[in-house]
Length: 432
Image (tube, rainbow, N blue to C red; front, side, top):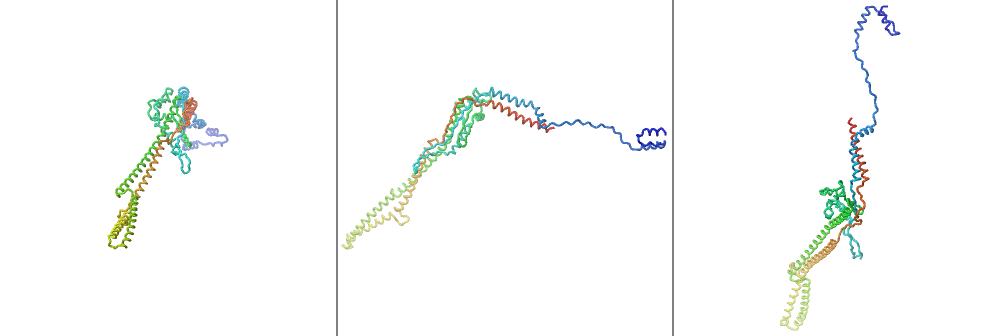
């Protein structure tokens, strides 16, 4: 066995068949075929990547807390420092504020009326209770408005009252404050409350001196009463004006009726058609009585004498004249002619004028009574303020509430800071 065969047998793996000895030609042919086979490209071996160890992600709330923990500077700036400043202010700087409280009701006046039918005396109100309730809300709105300043006495100028030396720098009002600023400050220092079912108005006035609080509360109550008087004054004035206008109108009707009657009398030539009718009737009766006597004389003489006797002719002439007079008097009373000027037509026209005059006088009498009643109501106070809890001088300050505010302010600031911090943490969490 040659050298190559021996080398192949030695290099063969154990258990493999021994290689067959090949000659030189076979070895050349085997080398040529081996070179003709395709070879894979040469690739440098690459080491597999080494992955880092996977860490477990923290919980979302822990991530949020970790981000919030980075806002420590803002916590100190917006929570700790303001809380400390407010505590120092309420403990050592804030001025005492005293409260004077008054309670009153807006009521309608009552008066006695006599009922002629029942013979009893009843109480009646000049104003409706609902109107008094509305006036209570009007008074409450008036007290908190700038209109109340005009009704306060000059000695209680709010710019002076609320710029006392006792007031601290934060609560003090600027003596040169504008009307709008003064009104806002006044609404912060004066509060009102209206109890709906009862209509009771509660007014609470704050000031830096006890006597100032009491004085301002009294002035506010007096101004409220002045306002209530003004509210009913216009209604009373309008009622009086309406009643006076009715009286003037009724008086004009009476004067017109009297003028028409006077013109009628001047036109007819007598004062009372009824009296004229009575007089004419009396004359007719007298004439008819005379005619009866003349008729009797004429009947007797005409039988005893000749128809041409002077006595008979005289009686006949007197009878004819008396008949003409009677017919004329009857024509003055009544007539069938449409344009006849009779006493009956004058009576009808006069009675129409007289009825018109009586009606005008009745209206005038009623208008006078209404005017008198309106005057009585105007002299009374329709609405008035009934104070049942007058303002007293406060003994202890009620404001500021130092302990409560010192605890509430840090708590509120902490809540606000926590809300904004959570919002900021959520924004950063969505950014990555």
